[in-house]
Image (cartoon, rainbow over all chains, first blue to last red):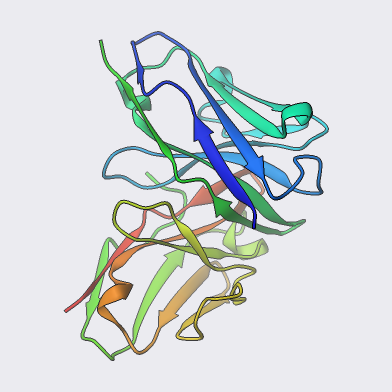
Length: 121
Length: 110
């Protein structure tokens, strides 16, 4: 079955850059799917960060767009997230997921297990 | 502040039925399909419903989805203690060109 696994540093200092990678197994990153990053601050709800297609096309949450870069590495079947100028407000569990649907249909399945990133001096 | 609005909490007794609402606008729910996710404590969200009313393989028919105008509803019948979780609605927002979620609803099975 399709599995996604996030990896990256769990602790960052303010003003630093968050870098995470999502390794995909059981599906090709070059399939007809988009791939996405979603985050969840402790005790709070879910927030879409952005998504990428294997061609390199991206969509970003307008509230994060100026700080976010999502990229894809087809040779490693993985995609990555970079979030610059982080603050304590960026402390969250970061999930990667596959986007299903198309046109007016849009859902996330499956999800990675998530990785907690803490921003603290 | 989430783009989609859900009640913070709902509760019902085992065996009963509960509904969770999700309110949006014409730029999201009004013109796009809705999905629902179940998040058990300490775990990643799991897809429950997609395309408003379709259950993925393995999801019991106790879970159902519907939509009317700019609002969607998740229904759960035959409540079990194992259904205690946070539930999120989600969809695409055509104005934002981004995915959006509701703030989540905590279900308590009394």
